[in-house]
Image 1 (cartoon, rainbow, N blue to C red):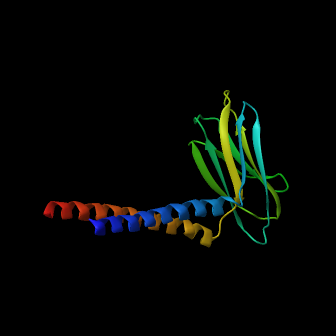
Image 2: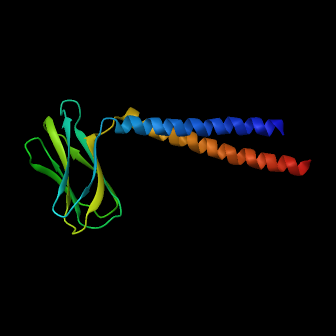
Image 3: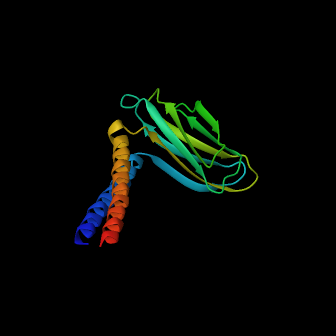
Length: 165
C-alpha cells in the first residue's frame, strides 16, 4: 500500500506541475494583449487600442467573447490611419482572428452592437505570441495528460494489488 501512495504523490505532483505551467503559459501569452470588457447598447462601440511595431511583428491577433451570445456583433480592425483592414460578423460566442501589421502605430479593435438589446462583450487585441510562448501551452497540456494517465495507471495498479491480497 505504501508503494501505491508514493506513486499517487508522484503523479499528483505531475498534474500540479501541468496546471501551474498552464496558468503561467496563459499569463505570458495574454500579458502583451490589450483587453476591454463592457456592456454595449444598441449603436454603441467598444474600442480597444494597442500600439504595434511592424518592424518587430507582422501578424496581430484579436478575439471577441460574447456573454449570453446573441447575433448582432461585428468586430473591425482599424490600422493607424483609421482604415478598416478587417471586418467580421460574429456568429459564435467566441471568435478569434488574425490581421497583418503593415505599418507601425495604434491599431484598434472596434466591437459594434447592432442588436437592440444590451450585450456584454470581452475583447483582446495585440501581437501574435512567438513560438516559444505558444509551445509553453502545448508542453503544459502534455504534462497534464501524462499526469492524468499516470493517475489512471496507479489506480488500476492499486485495485489489482488489493484483489490479490
